[in-house]
Image (cartoon, rainbow, N blue to C red; front, side):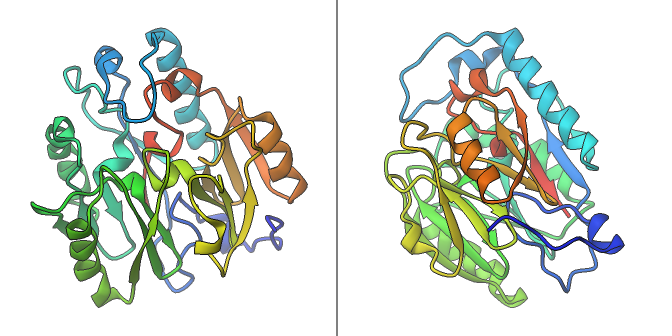
Length: 282
């Protein structure tokens, strides 16, 4: 399922992001990971499905630094946004935009407390892509969006509504993308429930997103004891994965995936996964 053919020299120079397999016709290499430092105010982060627990700030920052270090090791250029000490969720930059090969769509979170995060993301993306924007009454978090080849799959959640989906469809359609929605149950974002782990493989928690909603993909299911184990970043042929989910990691490796783990337990207390902490740009 995850096993890949040996890549050519060209393929080795390209990095695949959390969206899934790269458009083979695109000449643009994926080379940038956008991040932002963990603010001390993360202890006041938005929570939807979790009870608040104390967050060890030092550990959370060390986890984030380890993720950044691994992304650089895997060949990505790191670009850090300005620190945002008064924005508790600002480390979760992936929610602020949907980046396609052709354009970037700035989102409008269903959590109003996050709207101020967008300005600096817009400034960084402007030289990299033509920009479009989700406007009111639309809402969307990037964490609810998977780009799987030329199909964009969006989860309808408390953060993303039908108006936001319609606007994304309008922006993406001229470039040959289709957009469809899937239900999400019991978690914050679609990417909490399912993420790509190979060219034609997904990792999913079937209690939160139905594998049947992805009929053209091979689906590896998380272990029942690890409901938060479906969140991973695919970088080339490497699955960047939280170290805590040992049983699901075993399933990934049994399917032929090459896995590199990072600590992520403190950031998980803020309802964040590894995908949340990096906005990928080809």
